[in-house]
Image (cartoon, rainbow, N blue to C red; front, side, top):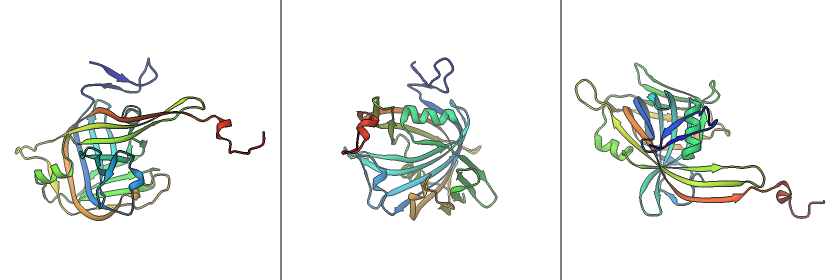
Length: 266
C-alpha cells in the first residue's frame, strides 16, 4: 500500500490510500440534473467537449463518515465527452466544509475546492440542500420532494457508478519557478444503501435548483437551469480514487521584469 499525504510531513493534514482512495459510508445527498441555459463553454478545458445543449447537475451531500472525516459537499457538474468519445463529468465548482477534504481534493485531484457552509436537511415538505459563502449568503438551494422510488435506469443515466470525473489541476509558483497545469481524471464508485425491506434508498419527485444570491466571487449560478430533467434524494456509500493525468503542461512563472510591457522605461 502506498499512502499519499500532505504537508507538514511530520503532521500531515490528510492521508490517502493510493489504491482505495477516499472511502465514504453513511452518506446522503440531494441532487438535480438539467439542461444549462447560456454559454458555459469557457468553463471546460481542452480535451473535453459539452453536449448541445449542455447538460449540468448540482449535488449537495452530507458525508456522515469518511477516511477524511465527516463533511458536507456541494458540487457543480457538466456532462462532457473526451477526445475518444468517452462520457464523463467535469467539475467547474466544488465546496466542502472541512480543511482536509479541501486540501486532498485540490492537491491530489485538482478539484477547485473552497470552504463553505453546506447543509442537507430532511424536512416534512422536502429534502433541502444549501450552499452558503459567507455563511449568511445562500448561493444555491436544491430542493427535492422524495415521493417515489427512483428507477435504477434513471440513476444510472443520471450518475452512473464508475463514470470518470475531470478537474483542472493548477499549481502556481513564485517568479522563476515551474507552474503546472494538468487535466486529471478521477473515479467515483457509488453504492446506494438499502432500507430494512431490502429496497434501494433512492427517491425522486418534484424538485428545483435556485441561486438566491449571485456572487462574482463564487459564480455557481453560471450553471443556470433551463429545463429540469430529474431530481433525486439518495443514501449511499462511495469510494473516490485518483485515475490518471490526461495532459500536463509546465511553464516557468514570469518574473517581474518579464511581466513588464514592452517600452517600459528602465
